[in-house]
Amino acid sequence: MYQIVFREDLTPNIHHFKIEAPAVARKAQAGQFVIVMADESGERIPLTVADWDREAGTVSVVFMEAGKTTQKLATLKKGDSLAAFAGPLGQPTEIENFGTVVCVAGGFAIATIVPIARALKEAGNRVISIMGFRSRNLVFWEKRLRGVSHELIVTTDDGSYGRKGLVTEPLRELLQTHKEVQRVIAIGPTVMMKFCSQTTVPFGVKTIVSLNPIMIDGSGMCGGCRVEVKGETRFTCVDGPDFDGHLVDWDLLLARQRTYQEEERKALELWQHQCRLTAEVGRNA
Ligand code: FAD
Ligand code: FES
Ligand code: MG
Image 1 (cartoon, rainbow, N blue to C red):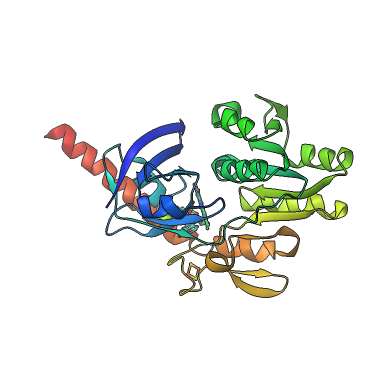
Image 2 (tube, rainbow, N blue to C red):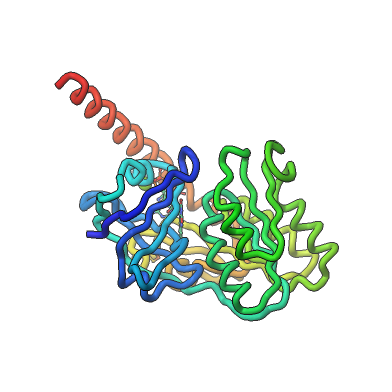
């Protein structure tokens, strides 16, 4: 069992857990992920390693409530344990001294980009980061990302904080004014990564994205995480999750992510119904 030694709510539906998992903490590198089970009977879901402390033997994950399993995770408290926390899995993000790198992240992926930006800065790069949110009340880890970047631009869709608009606008401007940018790393919702990749195409700047197809075993056995990159089938869990965004078949990925939407909706409804019943029994006891 993997104990939750720290829990904080970063926004109403984004949570940070620090998990006691010494074997994962020893080997984790930026860009890798773990497969988590909230309890013995639950499904397996992938979460990116957001941070680690090799001495303390702890690993941080940050997750957004999306459906049944992430809502179930959100009910856990400090001192509770996860049934599985397997990893680190996947290929680490390629870190070299590229020169100037732009790191773009949206929503929960801010936590994913922080260790990547940190590793790029430590490798001697000039790191310019862009973080995007829907609104001010969803902003988190701004100080952390600022601390590992030379420059930080914050955007909100509604303009309630930072610059109004999508992350692709400052990204395009940066590429127009900073011809020295060698690489863009964009992580977040699939649509955001798709549009960031489209934005960088005319500038010919290599753009790395972290793909998030449905995963089951996370070890290359089930084929659930198949994606098409440069017309070839790749398994995200072992070949990725990082790929060249200019070569990804985005529409196929978006379609495959929706495969089980009906089942996911029913599972969530049933779980929420069970939660309501349990609360009612508690009140009447
Ligand atoms: P559901 O209602 O079951 O699903 C909601 C949507 O999430 C689905 O439509 C589907 O697109 C996606 N999803 C469902 N099951 C899976 C699955 N087994 N694997 C992947 N996607 C799934 N989310 C975070 O909040 N933080 C992270 O750090 C993070 N890292 C990820 C790293 C990788 C490599 C991948 C592939 C995904 C990552 N995700 C992360 C997404 C996260 O795994 C899904 O949000 C989660 O599985 C949803 O489960 P659910 O039961 O709560 O929601
Ligand atoms: Fe099964 Fe990748 S999750 S092959
Ligand atoms: Mg689910």
